[in-house]
Amino acid sequence: MNITKIELRRLQVPLITPFKTALRTVNAVHDIIVLIHTDSGHIGYGGAAATVVITGDSHGAIIAAIESVIAPQLIGQSIYAFNQLLQRLHSSLVHNTSAKAAVEIALYDLWAQAHQQPLYRMLGGGAHSGQLETDVTISVDSIDKMLADSEHALARGYRTLKIKIGTNLHDDIARVTAIAEHVAGRASLRLDVNQGWTAKQTVYAMQQLERAGVELELVEQPVPAHDIAGMKFITERVLTPVMADESAFGPREVLTLLQQGAADIINIKLMKTGGLSKALWIADLCALYGVECMIGCMLESSVSVAAAAHLAAAKSHVITKVDLDSPSLASTQPVLGGCLFEAASIQLNQTPGLGISAIPSLQPL
Image 1: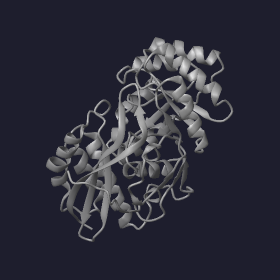
Image 2: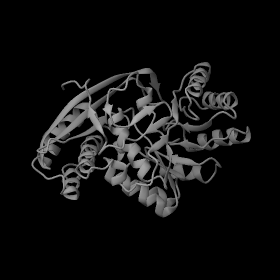
Image 3: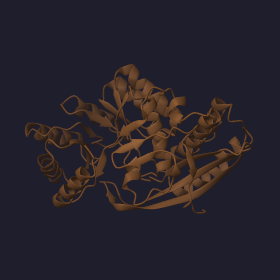
Image 4: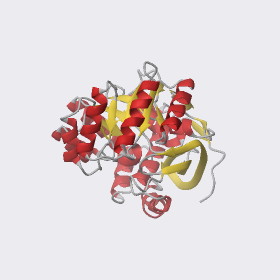
C-alpha cells in the first residue's frame, strides 16, 4: 500500500449557535481536509482547523505546509513503513502542528485500514466498549443566555457542562454561581477560563466559589499559556483541580508541567500535539506520573475529532475526561460512515480505520 497522491479540500459546516470564548467568536466549523490516496485504492482521511490565536495556524499556512513541504516527503512511500512515515512527517518542518495533525490522522487511518481494524484497536484499546460520553460547551454570554443554553443542553441529555468564561472576573464569578445553582444535582461543571485571568485573580475567584459551595470538576487554563509559575501558584492554593491546555502543547511542555507539579490534569488536543503519535507520548507520560488527562478538540469537524475519540478509547486508563462536542455543535453531520456523534454520546466505528466512506460536501481550495 503505497501513497500515490495527497489531496486537500475545504469543509465548512454552520454551527447551531455561535461559539464564543474569551479569545474569539466562531459561526461555522471550517476545516482543511486531507485525503491520502494509495495504489491499493484505500483513502486515508484527516482534517485540521485554523486556530490562529491558539496554535498560530491559518488555513493558508496549513495548505502551504502540506502541499509544499509535507506531501513531497510522503508520496511514493509505503504505509507499512509507518514509523519512518511519521519521522518524515515530523522532521519535514518545525511547528505547524495543525498541518502535521491533519496528515498524521490520515496516515493512522490508512495504517489501521491496512490491518483491517478500527483505529482504537490498533492503538491498543481492543477491550474498550467503543462508546464515549462528552461534555458540551456553554459559550460565554449574559447570565440569562448561559442559563438558557445550559437548560437546553440538559434537555438534550448532556450530563457535564463546560462553562466558558474569562472576560471579567466579577461577572465570571456571578455567571458560574448562577449556573451552579440552576443545574444543581443535574449536571457536573467544568470551568474554562481561556487564559483570561491572572494567577492571583484565579486564586481569589476559585476560593470565592469554593466557599460558596460551588463544586467544579476542574478549572482549565486560567492564566496565559507561558505562565507556568502562575499555573503552579494556583495549583498549590485551590482545591479544585487545575487543568493545563494551551500550556501543554507537546510532550516537552507536558513533562515540564508534570515535573513542576504545575497542573493536576493535562488536556490533550491533536491540533496542538501535531497528531496522534505525540498525543500517545503525552498519555503515557501522564500515566507514569499518575496524572489524568482530558481529550479535547478545537472547533473541528468529525474527521479529526473521530481520531481523538479513538485515542481516548485506546488510552481510557489515563484519558478519563472527554471534551469532544464540536461535531454536535454543527448544524449537520457531513461525514458518511465513521464515528456517530449524537449529543453527549459518541459511538466509535467498528469498521477499519476511521471508517469514513465519503464526505460529499467537500469543496475545492
